Amino acid sequence: MANTPSAKKAARKIARRTAINKANRSRMRTFVRQVEEAIATGDQEQAASALRLAQPQIMKAATKGILHANTAARKVSRLTRRVKALG
Image 1 (tube, rainbow, N blue to C red):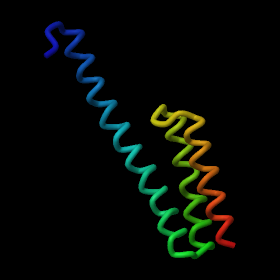
Image 2 (tube, rainbow, N blue to C red; image 1 turned 60 degrees about the horizontal axis):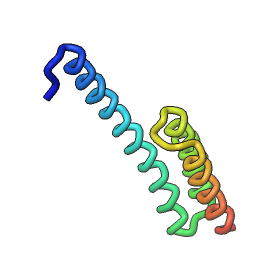
Image 3 (cartoon, rainbow, N blue to C red; image 1 turned 90 degrees about the vertical axis):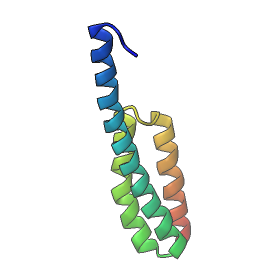
């Protein structure tokens, strides 16, 4: 456990930031899951619209440091390729 006042404050800041990161990561995963579910049903129109909503969330996660930029780009690329393959 933190003993100094600065260490206690740092622990509070970390806890606050962790909660924010967890919420943003969960939000991103929800959007990705919606795209994957649409792909599974085979509905390209629905999958494309879900991808249009998911892409900004994935890139926002990269901007906020939740994902590495290359990881985010790879996820978007793979989802896009799968959506196009439906058509």
